[in-house]
Image 1 (tube, rainbow, N blue to C red):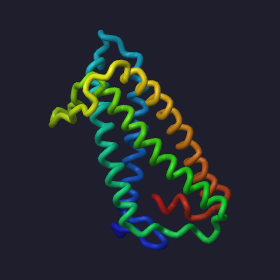
Image 2: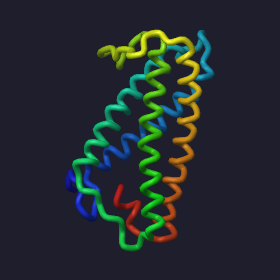
Image 3: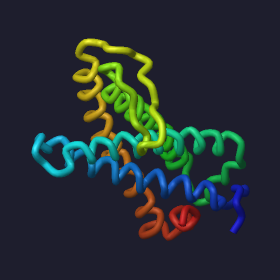
Image 4: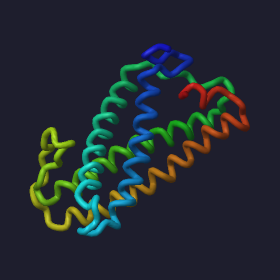
Length: 179
């Protein structure tokens, strides 16, 4: 397997980015759902947000690297069986996912740093607040973060449905190119 993409196939790096981001998104979503119901006396009251923030920062780093990789790499051509409508829908869904992910990460950063405190990245180093202490920022950013996270899940369901359609109904190579 090649590291870089070709005109007909995704390379190992693009596939790793895809699946690592998918794993992180589902993990972050699950932890996010879990931690909103934690009370002060729960065992993971401190640990769950710490991990959610750290993995969110890791997702940001992966997304920046993924975007740079995509810009500097060959993009595999659509399969000959893809209609122009499918190509346009795929483009909109992919662009939407990238924008949603980056916006969700930004809103998470704003929630975490709204009081002026840094994010502790896995206990290794702090990521400082650029906002200082802004009244009600945490609440506004929290509402945006929740809406964006649920929107990501909806768009991911559409993305997966498209991949399944290509594998089961069209019986083409679309899904296999990312495996």
